[in-house]
Length: 181
Image 1 (cartoon, one colour):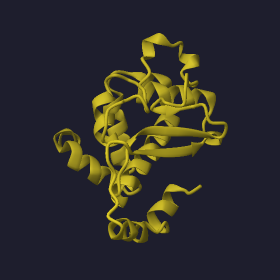
Image 2: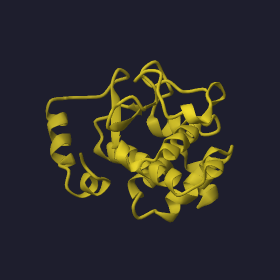
Image 3: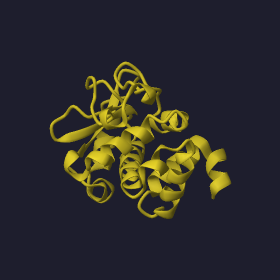
Image 4: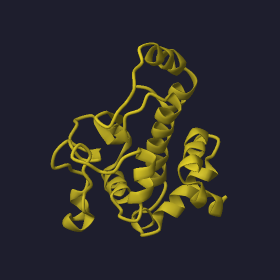
């Protein structure tokens, strides 16, 4: 288990990247990057808000860009209309974009694999920023149609912490960020 700070300051990403390059490793469409977060930090309401934000159809295209792939059979998307809000914190199987079935962790499965350390860190920052965003906002803010704009504002307000994510998002959808910045 590592904190975001540890990943950014101490984790040996350069050594791992050198080894991957030495062995000609690469990620293809069959690879996935799964990020686990301790369930202890989430309340039951937080888990519902997390599902509401990630599975919000208005956020889908942005999340696909950040995750570098669409929802698929290994990371299925929930249709919010099919669930009562209280049931959103459960998974039908582990193959959902957010897997709630693990005993001690929430597993974010939506990311495509990568051998680029900066993309791994941006993905971890995304999970951290979404977690902190949903924890610091009401269920009505998190679940509204334009919640992505509120989320982006949150990330920008906390820009020092999420610098890698902001740079990655600028690269992926600069036209959207330039309106806000």
